[in-house]
Length: 119
Image (cartoon, rainbow, N blue to C red):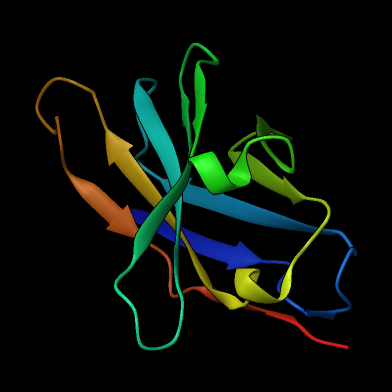
């Protein structure tokens, strides 16, 4: 089984920065992708960022130039968010998707971490 836990959410002023972390534990295998999503109140969950095992990354248009996804320590992935805006207020979720044989496509989600951008 795989366990996913996000951390780092907080209250921050517009223009500020936060670094969210996603810690994955359990039988992760060595081929996977990590995605960050967010859910703004009253809206559907949306994609924020992606990183593959080989380091390939992808960002949503709203995140380009402000957010960076990277691998930190073992089994830890970070989402660095700079230049935060009021509209970035959301619950941010980390998703682990296995790409290993036998568990290909299986997804595991964390409970989310709240990011609030306010003056």
